[in-house]
Image (cartoon, rainbow, N blue to C red):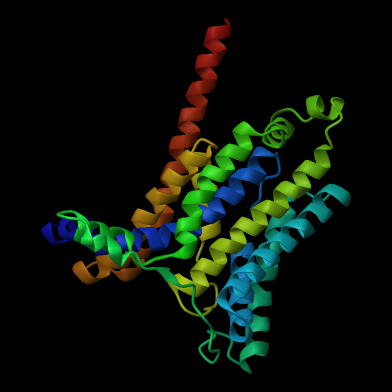
Length: 316
């Protein structure tokens, strides 16, 4: 137990948590935007997976930033596809989302085999690029706390720093711009903004596109920094964990960030614990993030039910 505490409170574990949190954070922000518009995006998993493979393949032939943008574009196009089927063809949003996930599971394996010449498991035959890390070695010159700051803040992905900025950007968009008010109004009570002349379907369509684009950044981070290369089903349920983080974060950007960080901590524990507790089956340790997700959803449901009862009692 002492070894676990020493590991948890080390700079190395902090770096690991930031690395594991970043893909979850982007997917959570994407899920938050679509959820607030009234279009729950259950396809975050598939969007991340397709974006990850797209980014890896493009990175073989183009600079890393072009590969990341291609992953963003892939996620955005999947969001547009969901909007087309849900808003134009009136298909159920949940069924469309699961269809995208199924498409991603099989489609990425087929595309991977075509790109690698037959390998259906990994992209090891492809010389893919990585997202560069931000070097903050100058922090070491700060007296006393310099080495600690360097250990904690240096070496993170550019996309990790972008994720911090995106939390503020999404918050500002939602609560400080008229378009954010439109989006929240469409999700809360669509009849009111529609009566005011706001195009409800257009707002939801763009929210799904933005949701897919953010999930695409998460997929690119996963395949071009957390792991260099693509592996079959490498998202491993992160898209569904992101949905849980949206609810646990009370549908607020800052809350979503804290929830994603919580799940990132438990995913980090699942990485370091097998080396410390050899007697615990590795499969059991790997289930920790998913168990936490279920418990978080139960807690959220309990809190929501209590809030409804409190409101009902206040009215009476």
